[in-house]
Every structure is written in C-alpha cells, then in structure tokens.
Image 1: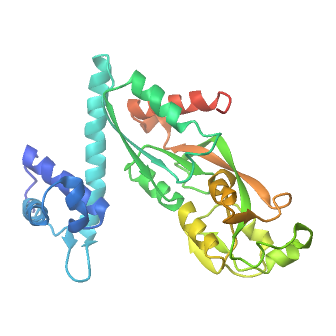
Image 2 (image 1 turned 180 degrees about the horizontal axis):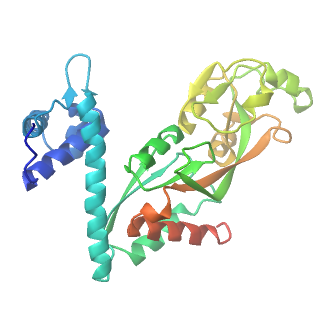
Image 3 (image 1 turned 180 degrees about the vertical axis):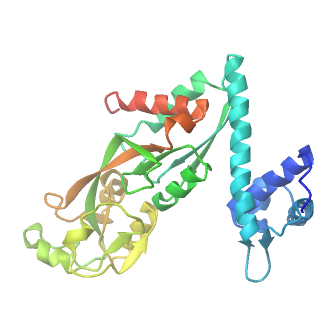
Length: 306
C-alpha cells in the first residue's frame, strides 16, 4: 500500500502554483515571463514536485511539452485545490466585513467597442465595492470557455450564445449585429449593389468561425468553407486578403469600412444579431466574489446602452 502524502508545506504550494502556470502557459519557456524566474529554476521546481508526489507529471523534449495522464489529473486537482483556498479566503473576508481573493473572468474578443457592452462599467462598480479582490481577465476563444468554466479555471465569462454543457448557465446581457464583409481587393468590392444577388454572394469563397454559433453560413453558401478563424482579428485578416468573405460584428468592422478597406455586402438582407451571454456554473457553487461580479454585470446591462 502506498504511503499517504504528508501535509502540504509552503514549498509544496509554491511548486503547485509553478506547475499550474507551466500547464496554462503550455511549457517551461513560455512560463518564464509569467513567473519571473528562469527556465532552469522552473525545471528544478517541477522535478522537485514530481519527486514529492512520486509521479511523472509531464514530458518535455524536442517534441514539446505534454502532460502525462497523472499530470492531467494532478492539474485538475490543483485547480480545485486553489479554488477552494480562494473560496476560504473569500468566506473569511466576508465574515470580517470585506470580500478578498481572486476572480478569473473570461471574455471573447472584439466586444470592447460594442455600444451595447457595459463590461467596463461592471468592472468599475465591482472594484469600487470590493477593491481588495484581484481580477484576472482573459480574452479567450468561445470554444475554450466551456472547458475553462467546468474545470474552475474561471468562474465568470461572457460568450456568444452557443450549445454548452448543461451545467453552464447562460443569461443574455447584450447583442452584437453581424454583417457579411469583403475586402478592398475582393472582386465584389466595386460591384454595384443592384448586381449583388444572394446567388452571386453564395458562390464566393468564405471564412467560417471555428466554434459552434448560429450564423447565416448554415444556409447562405453553397459549398464548404475555404478558411477558418477562431477570433475576430483572424477573420479580419482573411477578409482583408481579398480572397474570402466573412461575417464580422458591425462595430468591429467599422474602422476598416471608414478606411475603405472593407465593405458590407447586402446588409439589408445579410444582417443578424448574436446574443452575448453571461456564463457560469450554478450560483450555488459560485464564490461570493463571483456572485458579486455577476450582480454588477446584470446591474449595468439592465440600464440603457451608453
């Protein structure tokens, strides 16, 4: 029978934090900047942790960084462990009359210019009310947010309305209008609107989004996509190449339209709205800090758009 693991020390906690950062940075080299220590120190700390646990956590070499099966399980338990520690700090702080701790938030890209988005105001109100909470904000692809929420790597996220695990609760906050765009070098850029039939547009090479979200792609185009992007900036690059048409949020594309680098194609027919939602696990498992931020988000989005 394997001996039980002795109580964790401060050194163990430091090594587990290094391990978590290495995993989330996808390697030792990438974790250096985040941790502020050298690669050799990271390697030594990881080796010490593996010795302490009696397990091989990762493999590193020419093929790159990869977690072992044990490493993946330890990473999952590490996330739960630090979430429990943060929740403990939060609960004790609440008993003493002040919320403290950390809150990790995820948000998709290209929403900061959306006039319907009041995320910045929610942050301001939250920080004014609970100034001792440290916020970590990650701009993340929608297809990653579900995993991040379920693994407790973040508690709150803003994501397009899309199919998710039943444990993730979605509540609409605002919407973004989508138009179909082409770049200045695309053959349709100078085409008269009267000649831009849906049949003509449906024949064009198009770039799709690399995650599940309801769009006009499903019925408009007659063939498979020619390119894929996982964020709005990536789609903008594909459109600006002049080789593809694609949908973008109207507010995000406006800068390119004003510089005559993009054009909306038949916005009278090819315009639709996507709800942007607050996403989190059931409130019963949210920390007090996460619940407080959730209230701020709902509060500011219940008001009129700025």
